[in-house]
Image 1 (cartoon, rainbow, N blue to C red):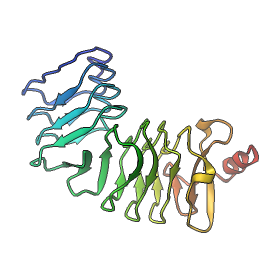
Image 2 (spheres, rainbow, N blue to C red; image 1 turned 60 degrees about the vertical axis):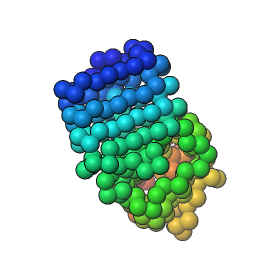
Image 3 (cartoon, one colour; image 1 turned 135 degrees about the horizontal axis):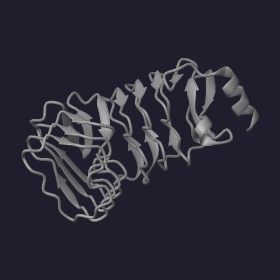
Length: 232
């Protein structure tokens, strides 16, 4: 893990004997422009190629079985993501990474701007899918989505997200976003609770959820909620 973190290498050629790329193995590489994951690699670790400012093109081979917590996040120049069509676990559509059945969204290209509409095939927005994305400011979530993963939108510049009734599970830290505002949250569900994250400081709005939605996989603490409201 972290083997070449913060090492500026314009070109990386991975051997075909490689099976696992560790967590943050090549992260914080400002000069890397392209990475090709060769046949034989089965696992790409968490943030393996994160925060590579110049990275614009990624190719993922058919052998990859696991990509942990969006290994390609925080890459503002990333425009092209290609997954080998023969990969049985993942696929790429319009440069987004999905599960093969299109039900889980794993990664979004960093170059996308303004409004992003999640595909209506998606049931799960995976951990870190939009983490620290600096160009998308509004996300449209379709009625198909049920789960929003851990830190899915954390540290992004997103200002507005809608919450359809189908969303029933929101994992830890999903919406710790500096730009998100209460008046821009589109809660069209009737009775709502305002859920706040203690990590965000004095009552910064985390998100607006229906009563049925669980925050961090647990029921919202009524006292914590009341304390947060009192600080507004």
